[in-house]
Length: 216
Figure 1 (cartoon, helix red, strand yellow):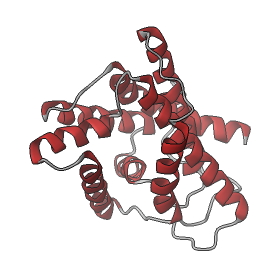
Figure 2 (tube, helix red, strand yellow):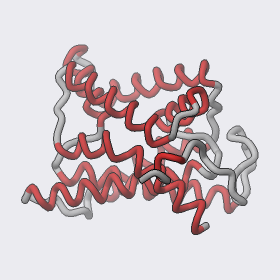
Figure 3 (cartoon, one colour):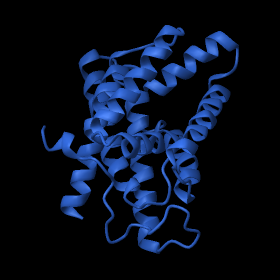
Figure 4 (cartoon, one colour):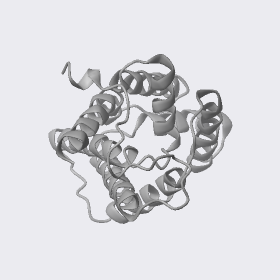
């Protein structure tokens, strides 16, 4: 556990791009990026299909949607744009990965939801939620090391980590708990899977980074 909370930055590995804004990345860099994003989408799908609750950011989108009358899709887009604005004072740089993050994850969710199980018993819903959160964490560790630009939420995490110097796991947990609390206050629906994601995604991302650094 101590090792998990000692991770304070995304490592630069042999396939990492020298800069996020790289329009001609190496093939191996793109492979790690895309593989990580495909896994990320699969993990999100497992959480959705479990029926145990959506991610904190979806809870926030639900809450804002209830207050404004906007659709959840449009609200999610507005929230993502606002997060990207927060990148400016955090000196975060977008890249190919920022765009592919949205495209590949969305495609993978639509594709995999057709094939995944939809458990009815609470115990299996919980198990599938745990597995989904773990997959998202491992996937984050893989795609972030490509250094081709993070998704809006992951970029907020790495930006705040760089500013504060705190462990990545702690930063991510703080973000997710804050988001789910705001979403719940606005009327969003919170489930067991939501709380698992909020408190588990930070340590799982750190595990993913340790896994990639150790075995790749």
